[in-house]
Amino acid sequence: MKKRISLHSLLQNDKLMMIASLVLAIVIWSLVVYGPSNSVEMDITGVPVSIKLNDYASQTLNLRIVDGANATATVTVRGLRSVVSNLRPQDLTVTADTGNVIKEGTYVLSLRPGAADDYSVVKVVGEDGTSATVTITCDVWREVAYPVEVEMPSVTVTDTEKYQFGTPAVSGEAVNEGQVIVAGPKSEISRVQKVVAVIEEKRAISEATVFEASLQARDEQGNVLESVSFRSAEGGKVSVTVPVMIYRKVSLTPAALHVPAGYTDIKNLVTVSPKEIELWGVPSEIDEYIESVQKQIQVDFDHLTPDTLTRTVTLETVDGIRPINGKETIKVKVALSGLSKRTLEVPLSASNFSVTNCPAGYTVTTTQTKLPTVTLYGSSRALNRVKVSDIRVVVDMANTATPGQQTVRARLVVGNQNTVWAYYGKDSAGVEVLVSVAQS
Image: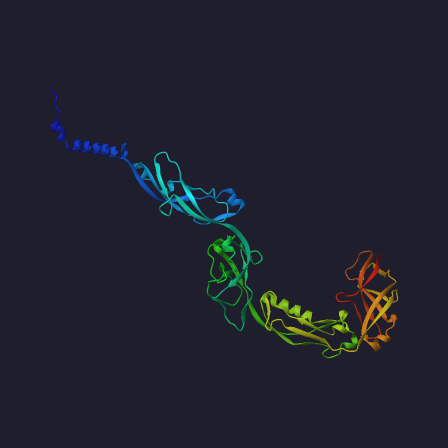
């Protein structure tokens, strides 16, 4: 006989009641959440507003949004609680209408919400909290090149008597010939008075050192303009090399070149004043600079005239070198006086033409009949004694072995008069002579 199942026994079954209660709870929750009468409104704040300028404004006019580009809105949505409660600001779309932006200025833009299938947008409110608008400011975008100055308030040299700073050099991808491109709105670019690279590190140095520096654009009052940027300067940083100069006292030793034999025994034939100079210089540059100065004060009789017996050489500050006395002047003087000039026409023949260092197997002959103008300097008495036959023409053919006619440089030797010299002009080292080179 089958056992009857009674309602009373079912109600007394705890396990069965637990299962039934769980199922009923799920049903009730589903009705509450998904029921047709469960539509709610919710405000979603911080919704980013998409603001894109039209092509005419951004490309033709080169306008940029300089204020208000990161505007947000509050969007009120209606829909099932299960849908709207899970919405995040980035899930919604709000667009600003930029159709009326046609020049620089401030604009109030209308907001348009994006469409959605599972909820509806009740309203959109901009950041003012009252209207469906946002405000932006546009300006023409400019890029201008500025030279970069360097500031290093906390960098020192280890010994001020031995070392001194040279001129810092700015480098990096953003730097071109000491300049950087500053980019920003026209209204801000017009305020830029200078650009500086600031070394913030504190250090004492005794040799050239590379530092990282921050670029700053400053106005006339020295205020930093934060709204501009620097093209290609990552993080607004550049490298600055700070050279360190060393001190050098130099004794000036004037040399005399191509001195006639009669003057070689004159004491202090060439003198300079001052006899010493003091310099600050970068170690890699100072020796070459000193050598250059010594060459400038030397006297070459090939180019000496009565008008150049006294001359001046001016030392100027160059990259890596700084004379202590600034733009110092050196006076160079040749201890001669009473000089005169004589011009001769010198015929050329085998008797007064000779060749030195002629390559083996070659012969050199002159194809020119005369030197139309030979200039000599010396005392009047010595010049008057010079005969045309005293002048010899000497050609040095070292390292020359090309057959055929060619123009070579020749030096003039004045015989019998050891205080007379030939003048070749300001730069030349001889006179031009046409010769024929033959291979035997």
